[in-house]
Length: 200
Image 1 (cartoon, rainbow, N blue to C red):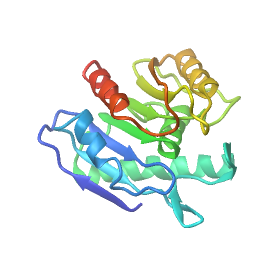
Image 2: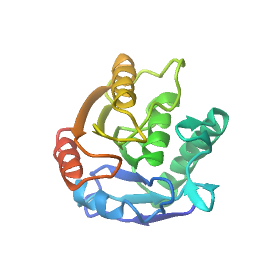
Image 3: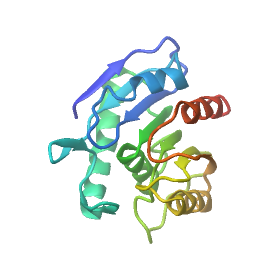
């Protein structure tokens, strides 16, 4: 997968897996990562799927309707990439925190839904429920921050609430932060995530 890796100052800090929104690149969340954990390794990844020329992490059938078969395939691809990257860049595979926005948040959520111990924690900005009606792995000890917009036209508040409940029912510790905006990622949202990050 096309990516960028920046070595952090603190080898004990979590490595941040940075996952962009639709149309983004591996560089999109580098500064967000630095704001949340300035001394962490940063691993920015570009999605392998193109939608009208715009990179994504998995296909969708329509707005808000995911291609579940492709989602499962791409999630498996991403977990394999993580394993390879941990060896290549010599970071602790068990100390990885995902930061995803929109489509990137959905693939990060899919990692949690499908693979036990895939992530130590996750920061999901404006996510949706990746899949419904499946049994999740045991997420005890996994912490999740959800940033959501009360007026988000692409990701209704019910989606974020459902996601929180599903993750909690699997044992995850979940904190949700609401902004009174739409789908955009706000500075105050990132600030709240950075404060939350200190507690994990």
